[in-house]
Amino acid sequence: MAEPPPALIQKVLKVDTKFSHYLHSKFHTLLPIFFHLILEISADFRFSFPISFSLLFTLSLPSLLPFFSSLLLGLLLDLAAVGLIKILFRRPRPPYNHISSMSTPVSADHFSFPSGHSSRVSFVAALVFLYKEAIEVAVVELREKGGVFGSWVGEEGKLVDVVVVGVCAWAVVTAISRVLLGRHYFFDVFAGFCLGVIEGVFSFRVLRFEDLFSCGLRDRGNYDCRLSKLQKCNCKVIMQTDFELPKHHHLSLVFGLVDKAVE
Image 1 (cartoon, helix red, strand yellow):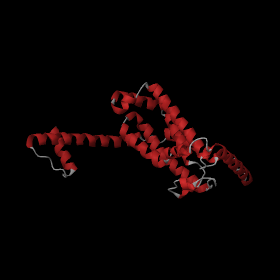
Image 2 (cartoon, helix red, strand yellow; image 1 turned 135 degrees about the vertical axis):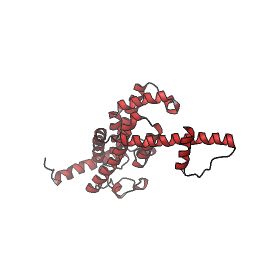
Image 3 (cartoon, one colour; image 1 turned 30 degrees about the horizontal axis):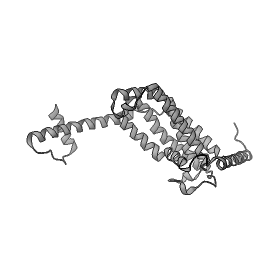
């Protein structure tokens, strides 16, 4: 299909500018400013990526490895795709955007199209929806493991439904807030939201490298296991000889001694 003529593009952008300004002027006081900023922070890559990475190793559930592999790699894909599109189109942000309250760590963040926050939240929502069955299995595993997380788990079906609906609602409200806050035009948010959904489907079908992440979890598990053996062995030595093992031994040498001691 042929590209639309520049005149048509200009007309669409003009309508988008007027409609976005109308939404901002009429409804930006609908929610408190701090609520918009909380939504902005929650969808920031500098917040979402470290939290997702931490949950991978905190939960350590095999059934969630495909989800977390798609999530982490998809977030990186989204960051690269949005940055590239912004640099190519270079659409300025709305003039009524308060730049002083906005963090722009890279130059591409000064541009408006597409909305990175909208693409990120829709990507997460799409992925949570697509991995609903895996999350249900993970909830059962959490209940069986007990502990802090397990004690929060109720009926897995209802809990997962609440999570999916909650994440989707968060995505929609966050996307709308980008227009009301004046960060983006409506079309920027719409395009970003569609991009995120496409990225979610792509990550679900292609970016599934759970074997790579399982190796990392397995190495961490082996390290924790050997460290636990070391602590037990150290306690036995203290009880029998009244002196502690040297604290600054090379770890590989100490772990080798422990392996022999506990065999």
